[in-house]
Image (cartoon, rainbow, N blue to C red; front, top):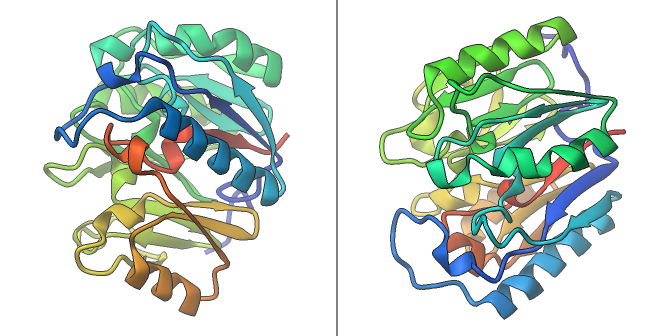
Length: 266
């Protein structure tokens, strides 16, 4: 199948990130793994930004939002394309104000910013952009109204939205998958078995390493969380150059590599 937007999923020149807030211990979490250490989170976040820069991306660092403990996970608040940003509607009530707080920065960075209706709920963590489509997972944070609103907002710009089912017990679609570019994805066996990646080449995470699925392809590198050696070996054998990063503190708040930045070309 010919890609509709070659390079859309992995070729980036810019990224927007946000520093973790001092209130981050009040962030949402599905399982209590202990409070994140702010100082260590800051160091890990700096290493993450450095990895993006090493991959060829100019990084903008926004100040922390103390009123929004989860705002370091900036990807949930917006969806970015070349010259276009969509201000999303995070599904958790405590996060609904993050998009409005981000809006001035989106308007400064993009030629056009579109919004969604207040009745919609949609997290960026449920949105997987490939070169041919925008795959959106229905989850506890993203509802059917949110998916429909996003599809309507993107249709005039030539982006096709397709709905998928997020596996039960999984917070976000991208908790279980990542685009690798060139019609390839990294996915957990449970998501791969669901059939939503028909027509794609799938690299599956190793057993017991499902959390490795939240990786990001940035130009010629794949950024992967530390602690998943067998999945790293599979990606290496598949020909991907890896940068492995320690994200222990983000993981305490259900966060991963994709959550920490908005990546785009422009």
